[in-house]
Image (cartoon, rainbow, N blue to C red; front, side, top):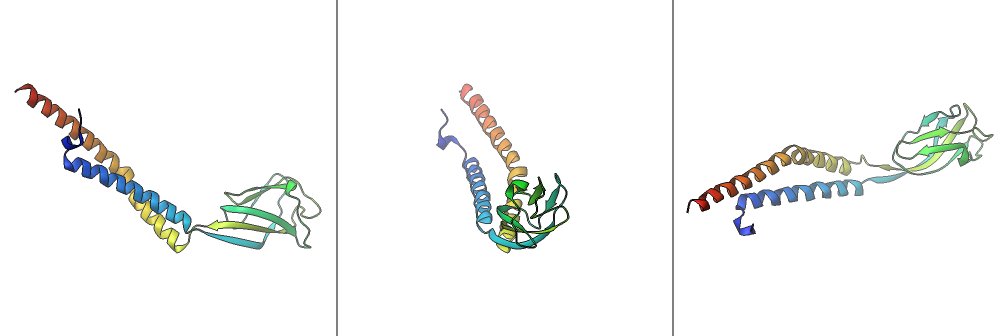
Length: 162
């Protein structure tokens, strides 16, 4: 029966270090997401493309696309476009009197800015630690497993010679 007291202390230390690295990476990722800031954009101008084509907004990671207006303040009906919130792309489904092909219209939306100084620093730290965990952790785990197998084999030979 395998008991905790039979494991060498260095194997247990490596397992604890691996757990701490994993928890550290997850914590840094959560802090990075928490430091992202919500921004409101009003009056971002764009030229309405032809039906079935796309226009990119200045930002991605939109949380809400509120509405689009033409130069006179008329609202472009939401049934005439779709918005990819992740990419910040408007796809034109149909033109109306509010926003027609080649008109300048104005978008109102909220987006998440995740490139703040704190988020950038946390992301850099997370990426650096992530490199260690993805590149080296598999090697360390393999060495631990091989060390355990060798220890059990040597112990088995030792016991059988008594």
